[in-house]
Length: 242
Image (cartoon, rainbow, N blue to C red; front, side, top):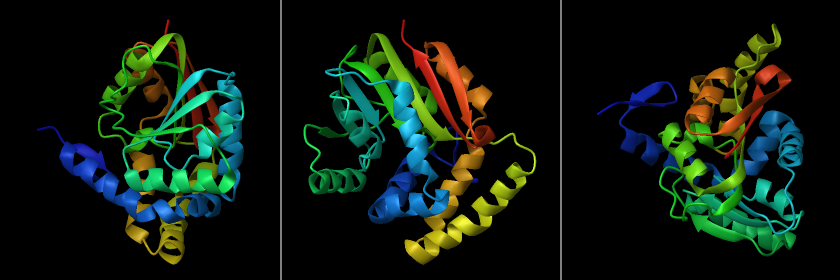
């Protein structure tokens, strides 16, 4: 059986799926707080930019995959689109459901789903979004194929994900911060250094912007574009099903 990466380790695919599930169950309650601390609040601006690029429209049907805590879905829902929030992890979904109740966000559909084997019929959604989730998928190519399958003709795929910055100087500083500061934040705030060490390692193992663009094209998407943020530390990838 082929091995897959779990951070800097090589493990069996089933083991990665199990371990990733364990990571997100442990960090679910502090996930959004840690995002604020790790990014200095910038993740909020990135997500706003991501949804602006998506341009959701009233009555569109949109699948937000790996969207458990609702951060992207809440933004999309303001447009009047019909959003299904899907996540493989029930603990993350529960956090999102509770946040939706606290914020008075209604009308969202919540679904426990594996990105590699979605239960939705073909040609179901007008758009598919995934933010900071695809690098944790065991078989990324299968998740992309499923995204393509459930989209209608003319549907669009949008992915927001960490990548590798190309800015000289900033790249070295960012690497040092990621490897030395983020795990310590995880230990201090979430009492979980190991999970945040994995999350940093998973970013380093994720394909480059150009490599991921090619994977999206191989899944059948057309007009695939990449928008780097901070030189590519974060990137928005998009494509169309035509």
